[in-house]
Image 1: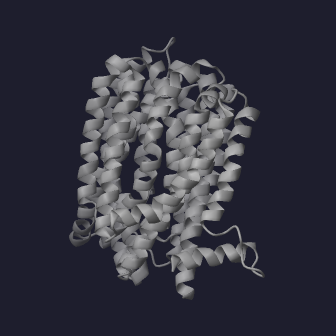
Image 2 (image 1 turned 45 degrees about the horizontal axis):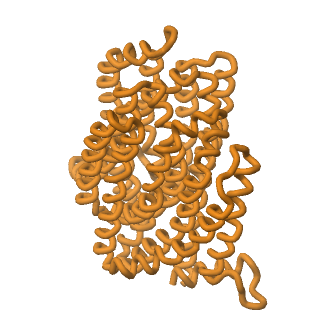
Length: 512
């Protein structure tokens, strides 16, 4: 029983620390977006967004190896198989190095053809070509270095990784502000990202060798059997990652190609508003993969079912009021955030449509972590590719008549359908009836979310001022928090049992 409680606490703490690091990243992104638009201008910021989308496709040279590492590091560490760990990690570093060379070759070949077209849309000569080349080099270097954060994830050392990430983030933000105040251009930004990225990964590598004192990186550990073992899982993970990149990044490219880079910036701002919330919550669910892999290695199917049910319920408590808040406060928020009322008109319609993917997308993320942890990715990956293909076809068909709203529809509709399919298939895999899944995971969060939505409807539209927006949000979330505690049975606690002890008791009883 003590071991079970320890595992539960570890899972909760891992999710919390991973979430904290992502929360810090998203908070920085929130404040930097209007700052960078102001310093760079809409056109140059639009170039930044388009280049980010292009680079996102080059991250596919990861080939699914990072996800593969997390699963197998968790599995072999749980079994105490140090030799297998050395084989898996050394093989991953070798494959990542080959992928980095491919990025440099392909990126160096296509960048001279893309950069001039982007630079022509600027009012004055810029530094788009060296900016893109340096960002390509930064990405190539990151690939073999990404072995180390994946190792820490597999070891469930999320606190250590998060502290390093937050430290690197603080350094990066200070450097960005410094260069933007002295020389607001794209190339200095690339230099900042490259330098801070290298330093951050070096620190992560030191911690990996500390936590795995028997870790050895050598070509002698690489063999065909290990590469074949990684191939099946990493291929499916790669296909799923490919589909994800298409679904998320194709929108800005389509808008920039069919309309303008300024329109791409407006679409990117709308997407960022929704993705900040989605990424923030998914950051907590990524910690489930090594936990599920450990449970699968020991044959604990009941534990995997509990991870699915409890994980889904708690992320729904978090995401449902966020989705309602975007619809209720999105317009004044965008106007105040970006500093001009026009941004509400440009960005809110696509943001409102994309927000439809939030709740289901985060719930699907929990189900997907079960599939990743159990190594059951084949159908998931191919379904994701179908979703991505439909996404591109719909977006390209609708961008002409509907503009950025059409692209948002092209993204949202297939995403919602795919989320439902993934959840249903995961329930079948772990032998949970869909009706039981809905009642145990969705019912209480949906009922509780009616409270803040009702409050926000009663209050009416908020003014585009931070105090007005903050007051409206708090007015809804205050009673919502009380209702969540009530439906979870935490409002009235037994006499003699105090705050944290009572909450811990309730968590552990639900885990059992």
